Image (cartoon, rainbow, N blue to C red; front, side):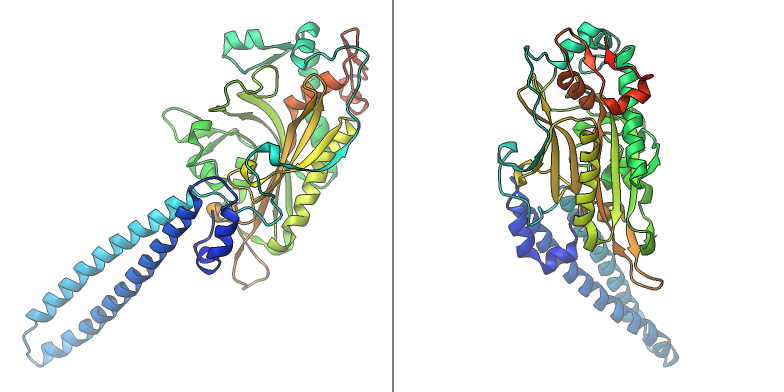
Length: 424
């Protein structure tokens, strides 16, 4: 969340950046500033009353020694206590309202974020690889998967419901191979592998910005305060919730495989066929904690790590810089990696790599100390898909399909699949 001190000291700068986003964010910031003024007034009045209370407490013994009537002094002390309690209650209400507003206010876009309303205004940064051209009509991945007997949404719909899949045989093996390949690549590049829990508590979901704003998109376990994770970003970032890290160990880089669970509220009709938009899917996530002055360099490194696995798979992709209107709630700047999908005739998102600055760190109270005795400061957090596994399966099926219905297995995956060269 945005810091109250930062808002107080740099209100116009923050307002200028938030105006890029659609929403009532200027009203939120103005309200936070008004509440901050009330908070300081209540604090000053409380301090004055307490000072008066302390003075009276010292005078009473002297008055008693002199034999003076203490009735009025006791009445005054009682009145001060009542007023202090009233002010403390009002102060608590003000602070809670400030936090509530800030928890529901998005991050301010970084200066490099372009203006825009939706994904049509995103800015292409680079392309890698040439889109595949076939001598036959490219088939969609769900049709390829069905004909090969490796994707089975019908049985999943019977067992669970829409937007779930059974992977069968070589399909299940391909998904497992991709997960292993991604983890091997990232650990070789210095990321520490962790296998996180798939259930987290409310504090963890709040710390990374999923709550309270997006509770409708989450799967909550009835009768508990546990949620199924929408991404490994949530448990991995919250590994360091309420920690003060040693500055010497920064940056910290983690990679994590997990299943991910999303209700996808409000996305009816959007890529509901195939593997693109599922309620449950697999992903390898990259998470970083770093000093504020290095976070944009670390974003570039993280994005290159995600790009490297797509290049190793020989999947054509492009990198785009998201405009303010397409930016995620907690992100200050995001690069999307979009993979070429022949049957769609366009690029589709396969990874988002984001710098949250100190937005998540404030919510989750993640700090670092530069040296012993130094005042703790908030870290910057980053994360990115390294990358979405189901969408990678879809991209492989479409980009490596053959006219006879088989699919050529990318060379880097063959050692994970018994040196097979084809899915048939």
